[in-house]
Amino acid sequence: VWLGENRMLFFNALEMFFHLVLPILGAILCGGILAGIFQALTQIQDRVIGLAAKLSSFGLACYLFSGEIARSFTEFTTRIWGGADLYR
Image (cartoon, rainbow, N blue to C red):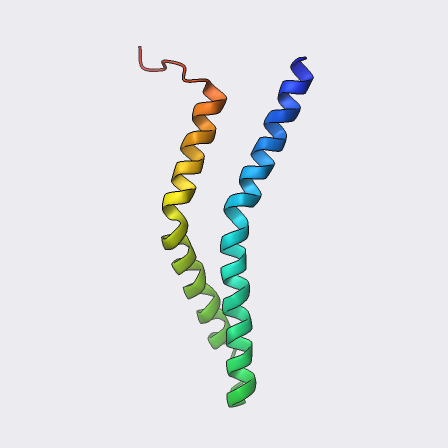
């Protein structure tokens, strides 16, 4: 039974990881694709354009999804600790 509980905890943690990481990675991917299209259209081949687009999309995604990330971490931690009273 103990092994089954750890297994479920592992899969729940893995699910939460992908739930939180995939939107940010998707935003970075979109930023990179848009920068590549912009570079192809203007024929400007500068690495800074791609880096700036990826960094700005990362920052924007972190800002937009920070509430969801904090809520998910709080929910997951509460579920792991089982609502234990740690401040007695």
